[in-house]
Image 1 (cartoon, rainbow, N blue to C red):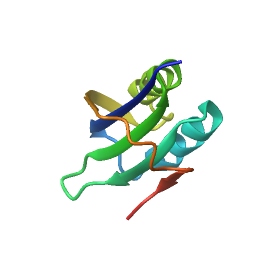
Image 2 (image 1 turned 120 degrees about the vertical axis):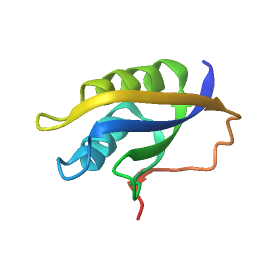
Image 3 (image 1 turned 180 degrees about the vertical axis):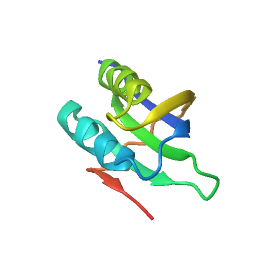
Length: 92
C-alpha cells in the first residue's frame, strides 16, 4: 500500500453548489484524510492524504463534481506524505 499526499485546486463553477460537502462525503467514504476549503478567487482547494488508489478515485469524483457544479480544471500536485490528519473536514 502506497500512501500519498496531494494538494488540488479546482477551477470552474465550484462554489455555492455543495462542492466542499460533496468532496468531504466522497473522501470519508474512500478513507481519504485532509481538508477542503473555498478560495477567495472562486476556486476550491483541498489537501488529500491516503492510499494512492483512494486518492486517485477521489480525484476522479472531484473532476465530475456534484450535479450543479461545472469543473473546468483540477490541478493536482503531489507533496510529501505526513500522516497528520485523522479525518476529512471542511475548513474556513
